[in-house]
Length: 263
Ligand code: ADP
Image 1 (cartoon, rainbow, N blue to C red):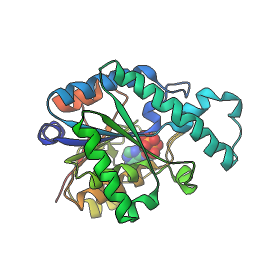
Image 2: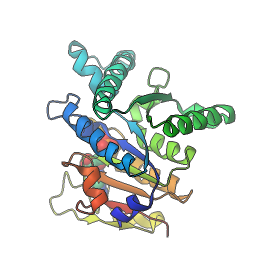
Image 3: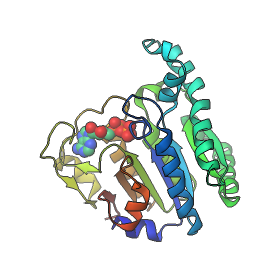
Image 4: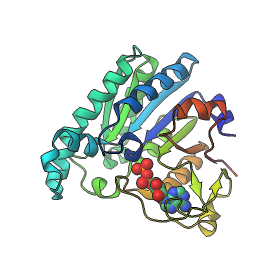
């Protein structure tokens, strides 16, 4: 199912969570980015259009300003994102440049989506970038958004972006293979749910544990993202982004994931 969804989609939004972008030391994982850019390039050669939503500004900021590690004050965290956003984009730029692809940065806040003129401009910019073969990289503008830092809402941002761009598919890359009946980090016997068709009742069948170290959204925001895109007829895949060649493997049907589909 997952491979079919990728096969038939032309416009794909891919969200990469901070857990996927971080290496075991909590630094930005450049080799992951290079490998990801390579796989994106190969999908683009097949005629797919890709837009990314990339978390990781805080992690990239910490890599650059490690002396701020223990500063939890909100202003420091926002300042950290300002530093980290540059590092993050520099790392993405290097990764995609190796494939001869340019990237474009789009920083958005929640308010942008409730303003008709702004949404129109965002949409036009997205279409123009993609038409020119540029990969847009969307992130929340943490410098102006306060609560965004706390709820780590890039799942929602990715869903909103998919709707805005009229995407055919949303892929959320996390550090788990998909939705489980219970938190796989806490329960070894947790079972992967491969297909979700009845989203409204899913919460009755699964239990949601806490999010882990870097991620702040947790599984609930991913389910909410699915609800949002599905209401516009856009399917969603939740998958492990850290597995070697994950994007390619999903496209070839050799990696398991959860597909959220219309009823
Ligand atoms: P990311 O930073 O990649 O967006 P999050 O940390 O926000 O990821 O959310 C994913 C985490 O949600 C998983 O690592 C897992 O520990 C946790 N989780 C809790 N309950 C579940 C569940 N039922 N199925 C899958 N993951 C779950």
